[in-house]
Length: 323
Image (tube, rainbow, N blue to C red; front, top):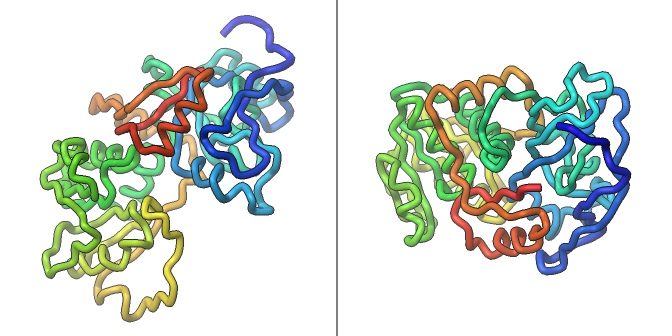
């Protein structure tokens, strides 16, 4: 990377609940690097369901810094490394740790981010592909290998497999050598997961005495969690990671009666990435020549259109914004 750091930049700034149609770019000062923080020139970022929830609802919570620049992940270059040990111009990805909530995130031309959440990458992938990886693949990886402890030869049920996270989990599990059963509630989306070993049209109830797989990744969330638990054989494990169903908690949940005997329930929260895991993810992707499913790439000048597409569910695959 060359050139001086400008004094101002374009960014999306939220102060309250905001419809996609009302999102616009604002000129704001470029933040200054300081000890423990890295200034990253953002080259591209992916859109995530978490950011949609923030924009539509969660921003009202007192825990959210306001005004705030949203965005929980990005790919870019180090503009000012401060005391991080990174080099100016070095390719990096960054994710989570409070991005876009506790401090300003990636919907901007520059982002000031905690050094321990900025990871160097040795990759020649184009910026949109690189930006589609961090949050999606880290969450899929953690759910499969930390939450479920998935191993080669096992079978996996992915409930809600046609979202970007579901497809990433499908890719990883198939590359590992697992049998995968993928579900979607929309018949038109069945072809998106045709690479799965079995595809199931999900009408909201799967439990019928048939054990679909050894382990399950629940991406619909609390809305179908109890049904997913009832799908599992003795010794089966369910990892609850997503909230696609729009239900965030279970009312009157009774673990003794609601978790079948011999079935295990766990979860995964992606707020704590680390260098070892990120290195392992990129090595696995390179080894198996995996490509993220990108549904659309928008220029930053069309961030409003990208968010309208996200809210409308009109894009199959990850939406990426190139800055």
